[in-house]
Image 1 (cartoon, helix red, strand yellow):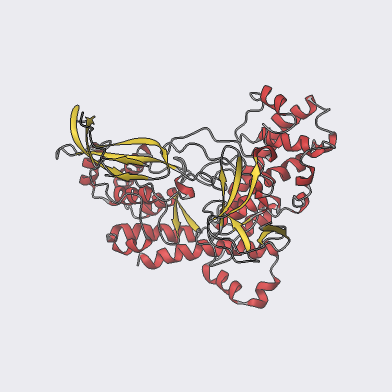
Image 2 (tube, rainbow over the protein chains, first blue to last red):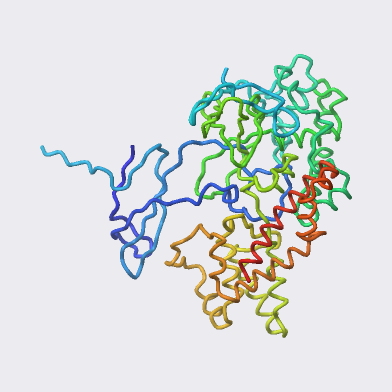
Length: 102
Length: 414
């Protein structure tokens, strides 16, 4: 179980400094055969040797979770992607771990 | 045993049938990695590994094909029982085995003849430049009867139709080294339909065929080969799903055809030059290419980003284009709805976009040898249809499915 907070202060490439960012989960378009690899709309490729865009009989059950960080600064709003390790379940804004008091 | 191999497949050949009711998520069977047939597991794996740089080729399939060629002629191959279940190599139904004129005539406009022609050239060239020399250099491993281009071509078709590929790490559209295909006994007996009920999962110890839907007793178990259009199914697998079964069917509109349609709308040289500028800009953005196509599904446009950007850039007023061109490179903050274009949105497009799309569809429909009505009549008339050869029936389904999608677009762009 992985939980990630919905807002995070982190480095913004465009602003050049730490800014608050909004964190959302990147929803990849359904894993259509056509989104495998960049060249999904190439003209009819040779089937001999074809590996993309046609992947064969499917496989993995987990995905790497992708986060989309959006800079909150109104003139900036630049975005970047961050990948976290594979996991079966992840939650955005899940239980916050409380700091232990000594 | 929960499953049984049966000749009751949907295609000529074998299929797998549930012996008892199966629940979604249930394990149907597992294949140990030791049973896989690949360049790494075959009995000449060390040699293939040593020689791998000499066996490099555009397809990347040579090591597997050599593994198959070797094991097929090995008297006591571990995989002999597996080979016994193979289809008759002399009776494969892929269009690459059809006579050239028949293939061209029946599948004109579908894109299949062009793809097959490329295949045949590549097969011949790799056989003569890499495979045959290798076999002749190791005659004790490849008896003379397997040193045949005909057999090689049959094995290529077999690999197209029966092989599996372990999916690589998905790094967000990164171009990864393609994984070499491999053969998975038992799992490759399953046939495919769009509305499938099983799935193959790869793990460290074994490969698992798992039900993805409940399967009633006696029903066939179907794997998925991916979201395949009929043209892809016939090209790579030698079969189609008859209308309306294949919900993954698509029609292509060549990108250059859209450019051509736009060109038709120009009257003076200045307009033509501007069009060229717009097209070159789209190429720079990697939205279009000379060889590419826009792919339209039954419910949505698959290549939504490419199509929307192209319509936008080709139809925008010249002043807007100037400005747009200068600002290129900065990711638009308005990219909310990326990744989804249902065809029902098309009537909402502005008139110029709809017109351009419509003209492109009309040009595309002209590339077929016959119109939709002709194909529709063939399908409707049961007597006439029954007299068609198997190939004619299959080709009809490929053409028909594409034309239906294209005609739907015509309605949406009225």
